[in-house]
Length: 566
Image: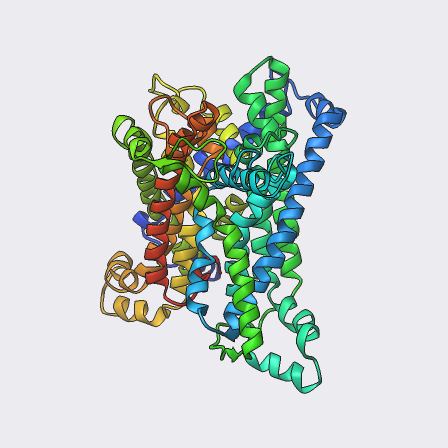
């Protein structure tokens, strides 16, 4: 009897259909996440004949250029975390704790830079701050400068682009964590004389550690894995750039193998960073954290002016690439002049009428990826929160792991894992267009899972138990009771997945199937090929699509910023 009770606790009311669905979830993770990573590691630790060896890693760690690339990538990632932390924490603190004119508008505007892919952002910055960009033309023509100022071409240019693209990610993570801090803790600190910066560093910031670590990890990995932005500004001594160049150029077998090894090292580092982050958070006690209504303090007039000036200053820089993309997508004859001499719609006609495949493919593949995210992500969130099925904690860990995995590593892992046809298939998966929505779904699955999970947290089990007590099956209970209560969270998470799927460049550039290119691939190819106006037009359309999705998210999520990250 005792043994039977234990079994019933492990599989409570598990129907054959439910177990079959749970098995299907595991099959998805095994085939499209675990197996590609295993294949990547297998190829990096073996010779072409399949013999185990450490020579590949020995070659990497004894090559001065690759070691410099590793160090540059680490420094760039850490530098971006530092700059986004300074900006993100300051913005989050102002928006959450204080009231001042324009606060609601700034709350919306500070999220917008996240919708611009770094690839598009770096193009916009080059148009304005490049050697022949608007600023340098003005400095040379009107301010007496003899040589253009190098604002963009170098590691500092990459840092600028990544910072102004990713600080909203840090802001959202901090806002979500800071929103859980009870005002009573601040009041207690003030009662014993802890105020200002001391209160922030002693009380507020330590309690935001879960959100901050999450944001810092995402910012680091995103920067670490981006190869398109550095290549645009002429930087190739970074790990992601070397992985991409060694794979796509295929000069010889040794360099190709080194591209695989570099990808494996990037994945290993990402997993290591994730483990360290989770361990660091787990040793903290955050039992006092829960969402509370925070009464915002009214700033004095001088401080209000300071807050508005600070936020405006950040946003002016963050919106520079939008200005550059807009000018170059509509402008004609923009050469050695501050702005274009005339304007036209011909570039939009070329990318939307003559070659509409980039836009249509992006919308189609991103939509399919979101359908996969919903089909997999909603059951995963349900299994993690509403069941005691064995392995659900591992599903949680795998979903978190996806956030940390670099897109370059995933792309190369898919290239190695799916280069041979499946049984009963004549074409390998990487030769079919369907590989693109699959990899997009895997890359963006966590946002749908977390959006669903956060909504399930506020639906009390008693609602579902009441429905089941009158004979409703679990499926009917979910459809008629739970889903109507959580649909906003599911939709919000799915829209985030859609925005980020549209932006995906690392994996799609590696897995591109001829004739099935997405907008990010088209932008990269147009820019590298010298058709910068067409690249800008595609980038402008991508921005509009992202802004529309962000507007919907803002309407659905209401005033609670960052909920999808919590």
